[in-house]
Length: 399
Image (tube, rainbow, N blue to C red):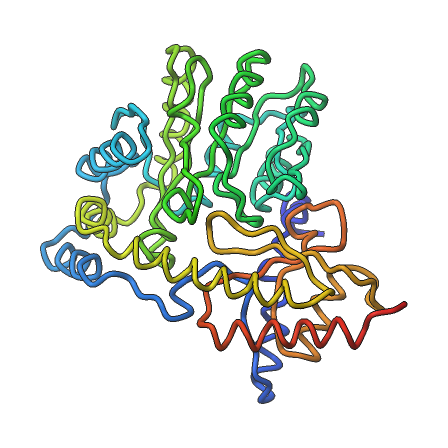
């Protein structure tokens, strides 16, 4: 075998069935895509002032390499946003701009994980955290999110899984795939637990401004003595998915290891040169420009979330915890069917009904009863897709 064993570790079920869907489309079958969190695939668009800022940056000659950690204008705008919006007292010299949060996850795990280190991850989780933990020789250890408690972290389960090899505790808030939004109390207790065991907390907050009812609390804003590595970006809130721009910051209230971690992440960034310079210029303008599109975006998503919850409430074959943020829903299939597992459920649903969803095990659920869909499509598409899902389950259920 010529390829490395490391690559065999990587799994990403969110896209695994896309080639099958494309083959079906080529044969004339209509496919309803509910698998990937890209608003621009539906009826949303990047705000005009951000698009114009990118054109202007290109025309004005910002087409060269920038410094590895990002241009000063963007670093300052990010620090300003985190202070004003998320109440995180952040300095620009503790931020690194990345090509999306995916690269930020890679940088963090490459920087911190040694062979045998344990990384505490929520279950369900976004798969890249498990992938890169394993890729760098670490061991993912999953802690439970409580479905019966709005997908909040189970603190007792976290506590029971910490040992001398545990190094990192990952939080995804608002959560992908569940849509859970964590309370101030939960976050404070997690930080206290991390402090007791000298753990670094990694907090993924890419959906920080896509919240429906709850108030969002940034983990770093609550930290008194715990190092928090924050991950965020522009793909979701600013509708810039294909532009691939994110950032990672280190918040170290005690001044313990923050500089060391920051310098290591910068070293990673230097080895890929920089994030695209004109896109960084446009992102700084996005942060400092009108934010009205965010309000409109969230209101539209909330209406679609409510509609999907009404559809699910009208059937006995599905149940779901109401998402409080992000733009996903994570239903449970209440019936047993003639499918072997959730992967076969997703495959058969695609073949027979032309609906593409993601099986729950793609997010390390530990069961085969869940799947994830986006709530991004227009109402007519969501109605059609969930009608097909319900029909499929009713047709294949076993008594």
